[in-house]
Image (tube, rainbow over all chains, first blue to last red; front, side, top):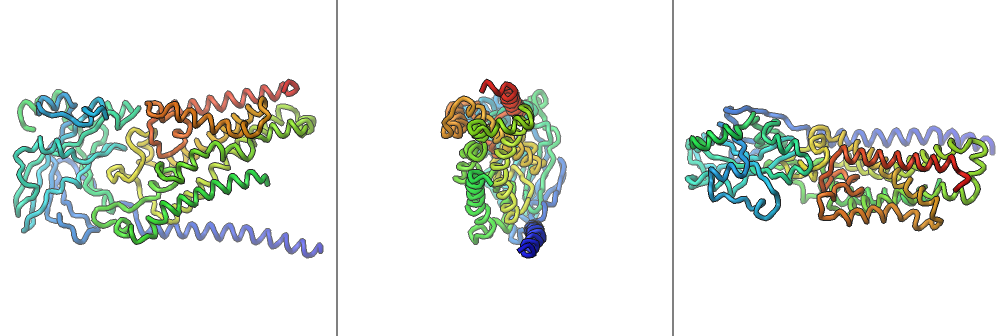
Length: 221
Length: 263
């Protein structure tokens, strides 16, 4: 009986750690396998004025492989400043009490179609990001800012300058007042793709307030 | 082992595993998500950081787990002090170790057991989801994550997601300990175990309902502990509130312990 208890004790002492180590190893192997299948994004960072292609290396059927873009400049305007530029501008989020203040990042982009066939202007791909804040293009405002743009396609070798607006609202920042007040001055970027290539353009310090007013008055924007 | 501990821990684990089966497993194994998984057409594959139980605030399993959190925390051990006093077991231990030692050890045990009961299911969920989904760094431009710019510590989530998760696990651990201590304080005055165990849960639901649709919804305990943070709150306010509550409860119970004969 004593002998049996001793063997049982030894079996438990050996078996339990063996089981724990085996399961831990299997879990680690599985986690490594899953993560090796999906490696971390390759970061491609560009600056103002750099020519950037829309092609995504993982997408073999990419229709935008021939389209390139270049960010010329950007401004951050408050909603009341934008009204000076577009008097009939009315933000539906503010009208519906979804927010009390808006800041609009407007990016002036030069699009170029280098392909020998017509290509669409890839507006939906572009997203603005500043740390945890991100937003897509405000298409309502896009139409107001680009009244002369008749088609959303580029002919072969055609280029076009467009203004891409991205709206940010105070309610999107909650109690993070510092992030809201400094919006546009903390590493704001224009992101083209997130995975497997993280392609983004650093917008630097967008023009704002007095500088933005000057741009509005001189009609460069 | 305490049967109540086994029961509540099992309940928590069942919810955590159900979350894996309903959220992460389909993303990882189902043919319906094959294109999304492939990362083609500009899609970002589902990441671990957006699909563990704390990151899916609008799934049934997450709602059940975080709503039931005060119950899961309190059922195993929160009435332990009350039972010890009622059965005179406390007298025997105090005569050997002294009042302060006994009460300090008891409070520590309550906090550890209540915290472990809630954090162990979360850890099991994290391991299971990590076995199914890759740890792709979260990116707000994919709009796949519940964490918004308004969320408490949102920038930490997008820069160091593991730190964010660790911080919320620590908060859940301490928060569960606080629920246990609240039950313990109540047990000194109320002899009905049912009320003692239910009190933190009822308190949390009452605060949740009172703050609903207000700017302060994010400060309700059940929202504070949920890592996805559907309502905004302020980190330093939350930390201060948690530490102050913990300190008040511990000091109150230790003072009560030193004056044990008055209980």
